Image 1: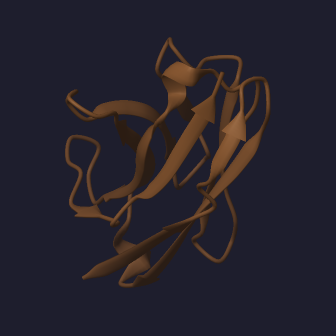
Image 2: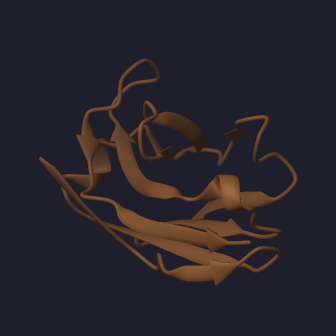
Length: 117
């Protein structure tokens, strides 16, 4: 089992920045990749960014490319640096861990990001 706990979400003005953190614990050695997803009210959960643990390859949704950066550290924590925030970035942000390239196996509880115009 892998446990994930997100933090860092809050209210911020448009154009501002936030850094979300995801602390992983448990059988973290089994993780292949980590990712961030978000879900806005009335919408489906959508992919934001992912990082492959070995090698550090990253992938982003087109809507955040150039504004958001995903990173990791040796303690198996994952971060999402969000710059130039827009009101449409408002959502509940989830951290996820995948044991394979095709699965998302563990999820955190989410942290709320609200961007005011």
